[in-house]
Length: 60
Image 1: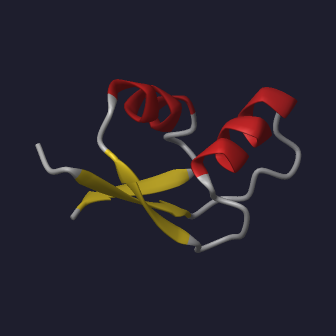
Image 2: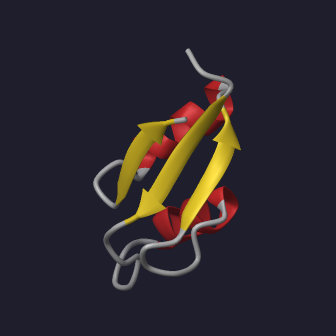
């Protein structure tokens, strides 16, 4: 596995449950089509899995 994971927000968090919106904010995904590079840790992987229907994942 790579050291970093590239995550892009492709669907909005508007109208989602508060926990989902908080997870997106915790990942640093605040605006649509924003891309962030995150460390590949089990905690980050778990957060991405919870919002997988809203994001696109690509390893860097």
